[in-house]
Length: 178
Image (cartoon, rainbow, N blue to C red):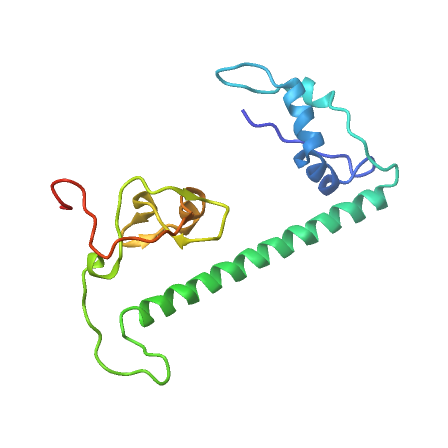
């Protein structure tokens, strides 16, 4: 069930209380009163017993709530800007990586090659570090789906392989790569 809290505007500012309840302090209040394991929940009587610090002045509560709201609005606008920049990046990648659009000063035909012809080594069980930026950037197969790399997953699951001298002859597992 869902409960609606109607704040008395003479006693508190609703926006201030919203941010208070969303804060770690408010979340701790919820966890102190939540009941049940399979379907955890709160009852209204418990919610009424939450103890929250707040300025006596409702004007100060309103100022704090408005300030936090403006930060939220700023974050939303930044996320929209990031999404727009990602769309621009995707469009540029689509055009540049297919030869549909060329950078100034470049012309001529493109060649088609297999990935195996372009790498110096491919091996299972590569040792890498996710935090050191020394070496060769690597990816893992689970970061690739639908022909694209999931960069969010890439950051968590891959990193940089240490470089070492490799033999000029290709190394392949017994039975070759299929």
